[in-house]
Image (cartoon, rainbow, N blue to C red):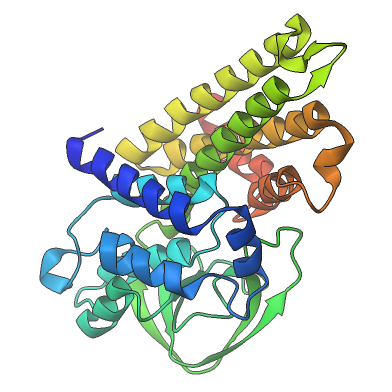
Length: 313
């Protein structure tokens, strides 16, 4: 982790801590656009999160995939509803063109426009708030010059999805591997959420007293939380490798590892918190829903495992 990247992580984390406490997240997810527009502007203007992967000559920060992964991991920790994933993927698609649309990239980089990439028109991240929509069939990219969108029902209230229908379209060229980039970025976000979910659970077991002592002092619970820590850190190592060397294999491995780790941590968090975890007042139910929603987004783990079969058998 470079010094600049650590500074990026700390800066995003500070803004999230100050402006996205649990009550603010709940307010944002219930808002008309599904995210806090003022926080999004702060993230774009003060940190440049939407400009990270855009070259400097096109109005961006000239960063790398790892920079976007760091920002998404920090947003994932607090389940911050923000259009960063879709916008970053739209930028990645536009940059793959022989002659990138500089004007559109500049608007995306400054946060005045929101992007979305269509892998499946039935559920598109940021689809109902997007200004720039690009679709892929796995081989080629298509720019949707006009489109309509309607909200799609999702179990995860912190991530808005939409059904998007194409109007006028125009070809853009070959797909640069957007599905793999999306898998890696989503995995980074999952690791952030899993680590925070575990932190909240550990803290709860320190505060919750039963039989005259904190429940976290019981050996059986210590062992369970130690196993969860190992699961998260092991998955983080897989995701870090994918970020450093993005390719179809590393992307599939990252998605499988991150999905399994987050789902396991969220399920155990519900058990360790007891009945309160499934009440609306608890934040753990939001992590549980994010875990299972994210595990299905962009293809469930079994689909990624099938991609790896040819390399094993």
